Image (cartoon, rainbow, N blue to C red; front, side, top):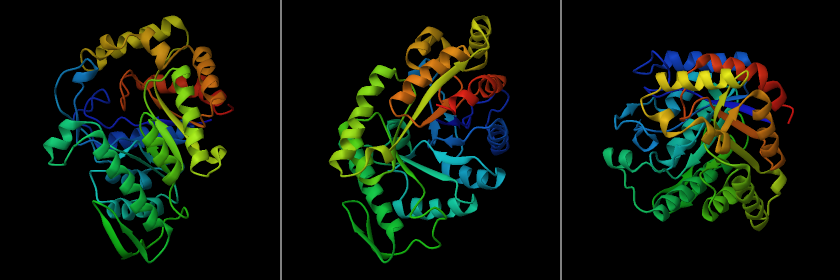
Amino acid sequence: MRVGLALPHFDFSLPGHDPVTFEAVADQARRAERLGFDSVWVSDHFFASLERYGGDDRRYGSLEALATLAGLATATTRVRLGTLVLCASFRHPAIVAKASAAIDRLSGGRLELGLGAGWYAAEFEAFGYPFGSVADRFARLEEAAAYMAAMFDGEPASFEGATWSLRDGANRPRPLQEPRPPLLLGGKGGPRLLRIAASLGDGWNTVWRWTPEAYAERASAAMRACERAGRDPSAFRLSLGLLTVVGEDEPDLRARYDRMGRTLPAGIVDATPLETLRIDGLAGTPGEVLERLERFARLGVSELIVSPAPIWFAMPDPEMLEVFARSVLPEARRL
């Protein structure tokens, strides 16, 4: 199992870094590389509120995803660099395809491109993007994925959709990874998303809280979607992100969670008790965490993305990453 890290890139993400800076994010990416992680990932938001997760209604800032990955391409040497996930509605797919090719070349062929429909209505409304229905957003996602597939397939590239069109286009210079960087479709795994992923993508990613039992049902649905699309299910990637808290032993685990409650914005830890994360996240001692990961590996998960907190893209206890790297990572990578 490959193991990646959700980088802390919001104003709330790292103690002592509000507002967040690129230098702080790059430091954590280089640290992940030194510790042996396989990949690092950023999300795609103009801002984020933690109100729905027990926090306040402040709009926390975030670094832009593609610009951040371009910077990380030169700040790191080995880890793969991914988006978890780009919102299909925020950029013309030609820009995404061109930027992806450039970042792939900058990084020496290390880009992982995650793409999703978007879910946070407040940022759509704040920046003038049409939010629409779930069906509307999934239609734009499918169209963007098909448009980019045309651009990466070769030239002249043409595509005609309801929102975007392409007439005798080209995507030069080409990415180093041919025919394109891996494309993961991100979401909860409903029928339409899995159909898009099986037809146009290289895999499916879902985050941040899953029990093995709930995940097993959607993983089986993903395999059936591959069969209907006429592709080999064994070549389809299953990527899973989980909120993660690990301690050397039970007292250490609880002490770390208590410290997170003092470091993260008020209300986050109270809204997500440690025992809840033990059910649908990745929380416990190293042995407990590895036992949970083994269950996901048996379900076909080939990639774990760790968010080391009870909230996404945060690192309230940077030292905990050392514990994970020392006590979990080596065995996880053997799964």
